[in-house]
Image (cartoon, rainbow over all chains, first blue to last red; front, side):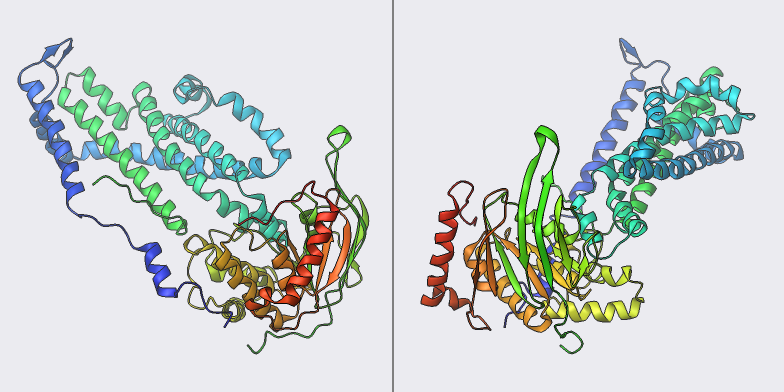
Length: 281
Length: 270
């Protein structure tokens, strides 16, 4: 009969979705070992007060940092800094996402919006967000709002540009297919443009999240009274060197977790994208 | 297959003195000049021509994707002015929405008409069954073979019960065996639906095997050079292409094609 499937249903499903598992423990073990070796090198460098042009005499050892971290995380004061930073990040990132995705979709799809909105964006884009700090302090009434502004600015450009690129890269044949299935303008935008651009949008959000952390910490170091960036900079001023490293590691972990959240949420919204496995172990 | 078979009252295509032009001034390219073609409702017409002869442009004009520079395209008495679900297009490849499941792709046209989720799913499933893809509802297009993707593409168009199904070398990117299976499948589906089909191809065997009538186009700017009725009995088994009757028809078409020109003709690609 003509309608016999060319591939049987269950076989095709499993072949397409089964992960390639070689050995489940080797790669995590290798990664843990890698971190262990890095900490060991740091420990030895501070133990021997290494002086090879770069000087380790004033650098706190891993043990000093750990002791300091236990003390800090046992106190309320440190959480105030962390919460201040997190609030600014999520506020700035949320505003940048709404603006960046919204404007990016309009600019990418409509020539009129491209002509009206893209020139100022292109003009301001090369200016690093940190260079905005003085103007930002003048523009905004509170320290909180000026730092959120800097954070927003940092995330906005990667988000808007990746969104524009995602829209412009949509296959026109898919738009034609939608039209010949009865889709009108609004439906094309909702059913084709938005999902078609979404992989690129998520890339933009992921990059934007990284940049907004850079901007946040810089802004807090320059003009702040709270925040992990402020805390780290002040620790240097009052000669509490282990606190500097605790601050740095905290920033690193928070930044990593934020990007992870963005990627996980992104992947949930795009179940059609294949997961790639790497060769090599 | 209850609820799918349809009566044949619609699907009359009248293409009259169609001109299609791209670009302007010294970049101006005439794709099609004074192209005319008529079909009766329920007819299967193959448009055969060399690459670049403008056959896809004709299809795009019927679909409403490109406006004619002159002439007219009329479907059941209504002039074509814009794309619409009454003229569904099956593209050569990669035209399914990658972010929608197989079911989501087939449901798309019904969703555009505002049909409720429950009714949508029931109808979409019936058409997936028609093209032999039951059990793949939840798969994404990226998980399917090329032939299966094209079957989804056909179901997605037919679920709208179009007046005309436009097919732009839909099996051109498939391997020879899959293509043959797809041609048989298409004839089986068409026997159920009796939708008018305008099928573009550069493969002579394919055109004769499928169609009631083969319209041979000239090189660019394309127009219909000749029309050859194919009076082979249906249903047509795959073995048909080895019969003397088929060979004789093929020789006739080939002669026309050769005579037309060696200029732009390409042998059917694998």
